[in-house]
Image (cartoon, rainbow, N blue to C red; front, top):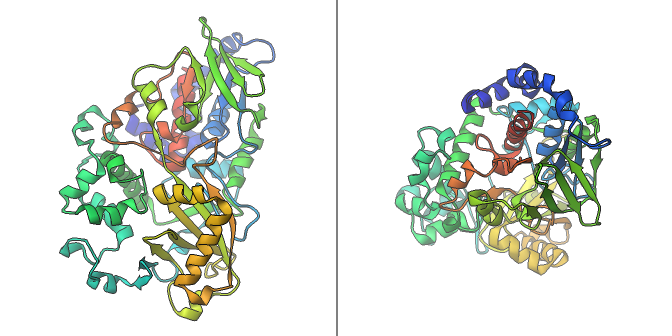
Length: 487
């Protein structure tokens, strides 16, 4: 199948149907016995590095075709960037949050894993929009439009800073087909987001406020390819077209990853940190671990993010653009603090509970994940890019104290009534070193080679996907790599 048919069939029919009906996968069943003969007694046919969603799903697909598979994971848990605080009210998500109606693969996996999905899209829309805080001053949309420090062009004065970049990318996208974002023909469009936004009439001051304070991708607008932003916009529009609903796992998304791991026949080995991957002249693969042990298999699938893979010795080494990508691919700094309130201080002061700030507090997002959707079960306070780095340098306890003191300063009704609980930094998470990946200007060309097999070393993970982002992108990559291994 070509790329578009492959993507649409998975989204429309679900991954199980695709796995069962694909002529290529069906044909490989006759070859499994011959392939299995190449492994040594007791070894798997395929060793998968990483027990995130792409590794777990690749293992299931390959087991469905009769292969013996084992997974090794450096963390003491499965799930990768699915990370739920299972001990906090509302089960706040530190990573993957929810999936739309167009997540055909994700919805199929959730059904197969036996978890219960709940619709959370309506919960996002409950309550008033977040207030904008410039310095210590709260501003409604109308007040922001009249604010003397508003640096946006006259036609955009009513647009809030957190809305502006996505709005302009959506309206001014240069891609006639967002699926073609990584094609060579799109290379001339691979400019910085800063240049793109300047072309829309934004000043440096406006770009800093609208993007650099809390960038969705990258550290600043110079650091991000506009093509990646336009690709993400196309993916989001496709999700919206599929329907308005969003789904999360009742009790926490991490339950889905745990259920998937239990369904596998092969071993899932936790606490096994990879330090080297070697390939013998005949193609036999050996993975070396920090504790001095090794595991071997005819084939290895690596789902490790490049931010950690660059610290793993690979022999023989990678080359060309693939080597560049492993060495340089950026990963988003995001740090989060979960805060609870003893009393609803927002009802006392009459202001919206959510806050978008231009200072050290970052973005305060109310969470409504209790049995009653109207109930606020807590707040995720999020810092991105440079602010995330600043929080990390402060340390968890100092950052939590800073967040509490700043909320109390801006909202006196909260004084003595809020508590900061868990601190989670993706940059300090040593098996990820950042959240999701992003591409700088000139790096989109890497996507042609980023996932090419290097002998019997194969690659998967969201960072290798070209037709979806988030969980759906990770699952897309597991389909591709399974077909590569079987083929």
